[in-house]
Image 1 (cartoon, rainbow, N blue to C red):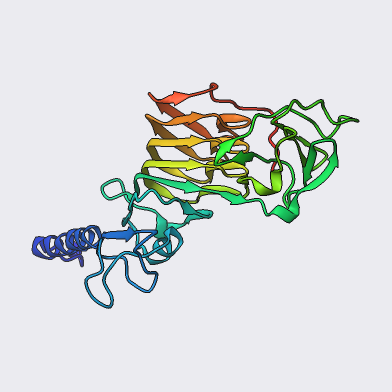
Image 2 (image 1 turned 180 degrees about the vertical axis):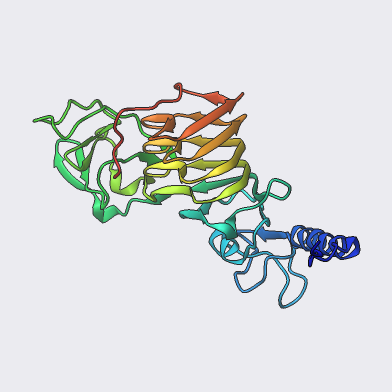
Length: 301
């Protein structure tokens, strides 16, 4: 009988290999850290690894954009809530902005605000009738007019309408790509604190997994407060308020799935929670007004 040429497996080698793998995994988990952001006292030249400046390298960064450049997989971004909004559009994309089931990638808002509003410059107003004023936004399709950071009442209009709808005093309408505002006769809009929901989306997620977004307010974006765009899973959004955005408070689209826990989505111009394409949102508690929607077709503008 021919003898086998296979050598028996040395259990000690297996244990060493398994131990090495386990240590590697644990090392990867313990590498996760915190990036601190402070829109008042932060400095984008620092590394974000301390809540307060301690030396020439350690201290909070100033912008969320810079924090997202510095993070590693499984890190936490912690925003200081200092009553100063964080302005701009921010994107989580790929493995750097992902985590694991044990160590998710986190954005901890601590009640801070992301805002997409921008002031309307006085020279952009044009008077086109008796107390009727016009602004033509650079981006078309969705809009939201604000005064002192509060939405102005709107009369719905469509580009298909042949004439501008009748506007009561203090109301606006989006018609044929422009914003029309009927001011009280005693008002002069160029001198007042009007602004537009101008930036596109507050927080976009694309091709990320095992992400937690907690305790954040996202408002005044032209399209969506948060858009879980495509190929996202393991997404948990908790104690987040998405309000006063030009299309939806929160959109889950493509093949993405997201769990919403105690989310508030209200006072958005078209949708509270929009589920587009194959996107699915599982909702626990919170305030979703009106109910989540899944329209047959959604504008991509």
